[in-house]
Length: 261
Figure 1: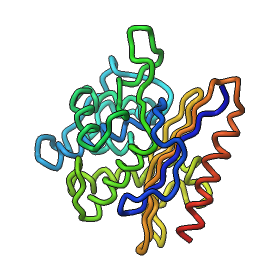
Figure 2: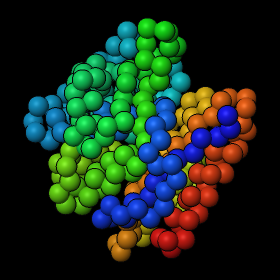
Figure 3: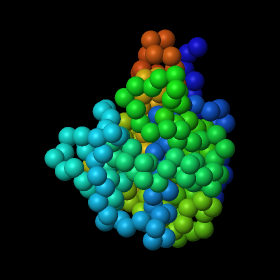
Figure 4: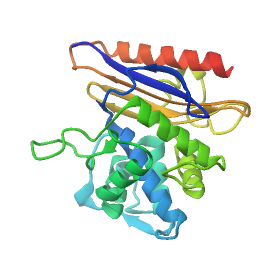
């Protein structure tokens, strides 16, 4: 089957700069956690949630792999700290606790409000998926995900964007600026993975990684320009080298770097 590749890059006004198979739906691993963060942020912004309310690390929702909370001594965290963990290191346990609080249905409604028809978070994170579970954590198209990234940044900059308010978008963008995975599209910018929210060029992104899946969505901007992007590579493990997806991601990043610098 080979490598399935989709990408979409939008300028600040939503015009396409670059695209390839942008409407193809792929599994996107942890990318769907962005919709969860947007829903939680809206509830904080409108007063339904207290940002400092403490959330318990429910053992029924524990899951391994990505994240730090499983390694920390604290059994409870302020809600906003759980959001930072999801944004920074794609924390699975924090994801499940937040999702249990707001509900999967509301997260789906948030994705729809953001203009998505094919991009969704389908389930909580699980160590193993059975036939009774959704087959993948999330799915999406590059076009929809790039537009979601564009709307978040537009609203965070004080503009009007459907599906996300200004205050909520500023929360989400602030959380995502802490993201440490710059291995995909962001790699050619050579930014500090631990500090890339300030300076002449700024970037936030959210990645998704699983067997046979690499996905990245985000925004790169300067005072003069901004682009929103999403890129997704999927393949059958064992039938394609894992190098190929990164080569595609890095090539896209190089093209964006040439525009921004």
